[in-house]
Length: 468
Ligand code: F0G
Image (cartoon, rainbow, N blue to C red):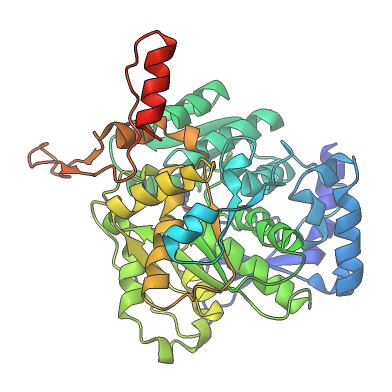
């Protein structure tokens, strides 16, 4: 088994390389080197797949279409179905929970709320552990198996850890997750416990956990599965392929994602770029990322850029000022120093999209509006609809344009938030370390609090009448 795995990995080295994205460095490394940043300059790595072997566009589309109807486990997965685009070669020791295959819905109420004729919502919360992380975790944990790692680790705001724990469990690997103590929703924490991860509650925020992870990455027994790991991005990029199949290859004008650690925006940007390079699409959709106002270092940097001189992402700023104490009730994206900011910024600039921020009130109301369409997402995901509303109002998206919002996590990830919004008790604390300062209340503009109703038919009918 091990020999077979090693052979597969050697062959894969011919199919792709790891490359430093810093144009002044550009160093290249083999796929079997267990590195997360460029050993030469410390820069961010990405995987450069040699896609020429994939075939002509019509043949690729046909092959993917046929696989969608197949019962081969590799084809049932909405990630491994696109395996010629991934840096692995057969036989792949793939670890899957049959991720991907998520629905693309129309959201008529959300569209009207944003001022659009139509809006589609790609619900990545319908993945096996309830978030988009699964599409990248299947490839990252597969790579951990290829490399013979003993323990997979990550820092997380809750979803990466739940996903890592599940996939490591499937692979029979030990897993350990570093979580900021007291800042993770109960549902996400429960998932990591149940899937058997060692849960380390760290006194600090997500960025502190991420710093620790970068130190741990030196240990040869450990495999780091945060989105700094380019194999995560490879799995996550397949969402662009699935989305385009669902759109019958009609490229949307805008694709909008939440921005936290900025892995998702990086991955979607890479996926669309590869489709363009292969001739499967004729242009890129404008990719925009939306951050929460209190955790918006990349949006702040974006606002300072002169877009006329950004040169399609060729001229990237060297540094980004982190937010020291990020604050948001959308805990999934409560991140002050996103590790993938450079790759994401490059992808957004190349596409002609934007990076902006939205307030706590805007996130909460957008979330409730998505709910009215019968679609349940978590607060971090609702930044998309809040952001689209703002971009429409500012004239950056036209009412008749074709727009897709990527919803990244399921509503049941954080039911406490939802309940508090509808009961009118949602509030953001002051952020002061000593607990001083008044909390900022979030007004439930679309509040739907439960009614206490007497146990008889007449009372129920009367209540219905009143609320019609
Ligand atoms: N939406 C959800 C539901 C998330 O969990 C995250 C990130 C994001 C959006 C942002 O995506 O980081 O790729 O920009 N969650 C990470 C975690 C950080 O640890 O679960 P990103």
